[in-house]
Length: 379
Image (cartoon, rainbow, N blue to C red; front, side, top):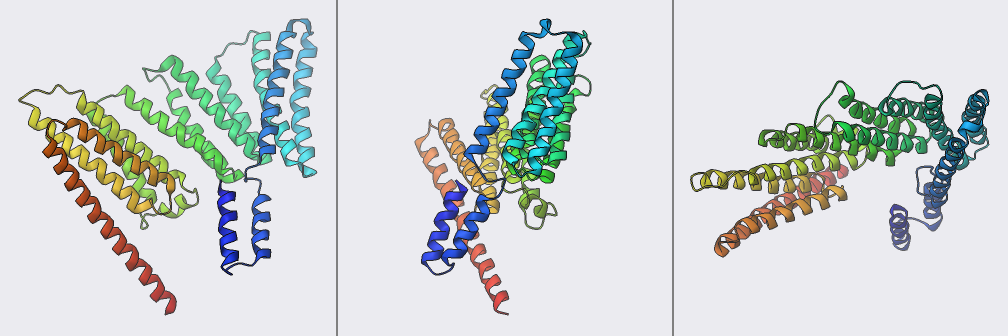
């Protein structure tokens, strides 16, 4: 997607004489040469490695009882190290795609070997601890070989841990295990920066969003929902306001920090709406509930406008999410006040005027900032 847009922009710039054709071709060649750029061949090779690894493990497990115990251990050991040493050899020869495939096979073999050896010797333990060890091994391999495919595999293993834990502990907090997803997310983010695997950062952010949502489910209440939304909006402001000390660091991570922070705020606002709607509406409480609805509506619309004003120009993901939240809030308010056509029309009028005023302010500020930059350049 980005390459197509880059190619179209370069063609426009060449036609306008801003860039010569030779430089444009050089830019495209440089982008295509990056390991982080999309390659259908790379993706298919990784998928083939995963399928071959699963087939190999299934074949071994199907014939497990017929293989002598010592031969089992030697075969597993040779298979794992054979894949890793083969990957190292391919990397030195510049065959990064095949090396990534062998690394995937090695890590999958490591996880299968743990399960088979544990079954062979009747070792005590559970699948959560096995996944943690498997995740740690994948992270070590990713750091040693600086493999983005290994970071992605570590991300899938982190998701597997979260799914396995929630399957048995969906409604309770037990021990220190609930902190493991956050630790895994932190390790993934560190690996993303060290290995330069920007796409894999989404694994970590989605883990954090899911963990926060699960935590709300354990303490479901209106106050918890308000705290959820407030923390999300505070995180969004921290990574979006130019004066924030976190802004330079957030920019190095692309659009993801602002988008996922605002996503947490949007989920929190949705939970606030849900908690308010669960309240029993009576004649005595109608005015109080209506006031709460107005406050939440204003906060939701204001958060959308703030998100667009701060990140809408440069961050398409935040912009479209803010549009979606704004539209959903308008439709929700229309459904709640549908009994009065005049009231609904009046709300749309007021909301339209407020958004128009905000747009006018943003446009004036952008023009002023643009003029200031031009004056500074001329000076």
